[in-house]
Image 1 (cartoon, one colour):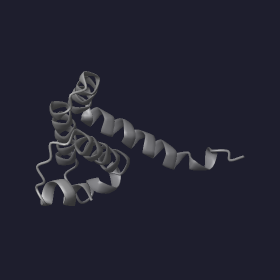
Image 2 (tube, one colour):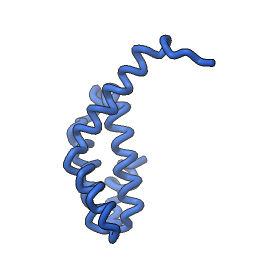
Image 3 (cartoon, rainbow, N blue to C red):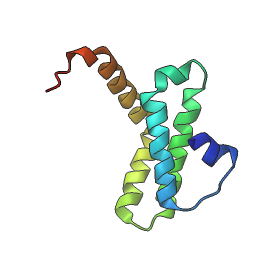
Length: 101
C-alpha cells in the first residue's frame, strides 16, 4: 500500500502527517517483514524509502521537536528496521514460550 500510494503514483505530498505515516508503514514493512521481503525485494531500497519519508516529514513540519525526531528516524532508519526484524524473529522463535493468562 505504501509503495502504491507514495511511489507508483508519485504523490508529492508536503503533509508531514502523511509522510510520518508513510515512514511508519515503511518501518513496519521493512522491519517486521524483512525476512519475507528479502526473497523478492531489495530491502535496502525500502530502507532508503522509509528514511526519505521521515526526512521529508521533518522538513515540512513546524514542530521543532518533531523535526528533531524525524531527523533522527531518517538518519537511523536502517538501524530501526534491523531492530524490528530481530524483534519479529525473537517473537517467532519464542512464541510457544509466551504464557497467556
